[in-house]
Each structure stands twice: as structure tokens, then as C-alpha cells.
Amino acid sequence: MSGWNELKKKFALEVGDLPTPQGANVVMIEKFDTERFSAVNPETKQVEPQTRHRMWLVGFEYPLRLNNTRVETLAAVLGCGPEDARGRKIVLLAGTVQRYGKTVPDIVIHPYAPDEITPCTDVPYHLAARQNERLMLAMQCGVRIAQARTALTGQGQQHQPGPSPQPGAATQPSRKFAATGVALGKEAAAELMMLLKERASDWNWLTLQLSTRGMGELVANRQPFECDGAIREPAWRILKDMPVTVGGFDREKAKAALITAWTPPAPVQGEVVDRTTGEVVNPDDIPF
Image (cartoon, rainbow, N blue to C red; front, side, top):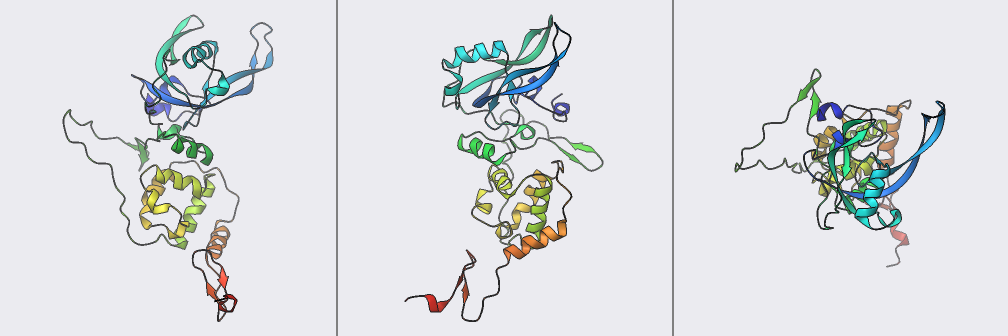
């Protein structure tokens, strides 16, 4: 079910989204807000504007919608108001509730809060926040984004993960991307920037994604074309399954403009160009 659940269009977290459906899911509260929607009033039978409240969790792209039961549980567990609940940890469980006279599965908030030193459960890759600010907050709060468990390959075939290791067996270390010593280059970097633009993302977002995968040293404080070529494969793994949502621009013109911006002007005789900042320095202006 979890595989199919990843393909559904989402507006809020559902019970099938819990990273650990058979156990505790430790999450951190980011903020609360209110959404407005239209629905049929059961008394008047008319479509009327309504509101409902949402709780956003650090690292998650989608919020958890609040009802009276969840609000009352939060108040009892946290012992504070909503304005002081930001940054607090709670536990989400897969449970059952009564809805329209039927028992159905749903997300339940555990009646006891975890210790503050308890680490948060990794956020599934397909549910991870997309905005740079929210990803940065997740990193600052120590909330990790899990790598994708499956990927679509070839003729629509799904790559299945290997069998679970036997108890006591040695586990294989996670893949390491060693530096190649060869820079990505301006042409490849410009193409990468176009792929990001088409997916409504940018370089800062990608560097955060790569940093969570242990490649922070290869991208930190570097222009895209200066980064080691080892980022090519993991960057493509991140981008290839993301939907293309931005179009209508001249890719070749945009790429050429980027490459031009990355290329410092040729210095006039007697001048020196700082390769780091691009600043042109005239030796005659140096007072010593």
C-alpha cells in the first residue's frame, strides 16, 4: 500500500504516510495555520465556506489537519498554548477512530510526549519539504530526510529494494561518492541549472539535498561549475522523478546567459582579475 500511496495527490498527511506504521513516529512541530475551503453544510445542504486548522511538521511537505480530538490531545501532552508549541516533539501513531459510525484507520497523537533528546523519525523522501527555508530548518533541527526507497526505471518497471539482512548479518555500508578531482564544468553546470529551473527549484535547494546525502563538502561555498563531477549521478537521481512544472523559456539562451555570467571579462593589459570574486584590480591602484 505504501508504494501506491506515494503516487496519490496530497494536501495533508494520511495514516499511510507514517514512516513507521507499526510503531512510534517522533516528529517536531513547526507551526500552525488555518486553511479555507468550501463544503456542503449537512444542515442547509448548501455549499458554504469553512475553515480548518493545520499543524505543520518540520521536514514534511504536507501538514496534519487538526480536529477537536487532536487539539485536545496536543493541549494535554504539551501543556502550553500553540504559540509555545513550536519546536516541541510529539509522537504520531497509526490507530483507529470512529467516523460516520465506522471504525477507520487514522493518525493518532500519542498521549505522552517523547524526551527532547529523542531523535525525530526520518522523513520519507517523497514527503520531504521542497522550500529551501523549510529544508534549512529541518537541517538545523536535526530532522533527516530519508533517501528514496524505490525508483521507476526502464519501461515503467519498478526497481525493488533487496531483501532485508538476516539478524546478526553484517550490513552493507551506504554508497559513498568519492571526489573525481574533475570539476563539473560550465556547460554541464548550465544544463543542471536548467533542469532545476524546469522543476521550480534552484541551486541552494539542490545543495541542501546533496548535503543531506553526505556530499556537503563537494558543494559547499562553490559555484555550480566549480563542484566536483561526482555530484552528477546523485543530482540526477534527485531530479529525474520530479515533475517538470516550468516551461516557456528559451533553454539555450538561458544556458548561454549563465555561462557568460560565470565567465569573467578578459583583463585589460596591466590589470588582474580576482578569480574568486571576479573583481578587476589595477596594480597602479595598490598603494604599496
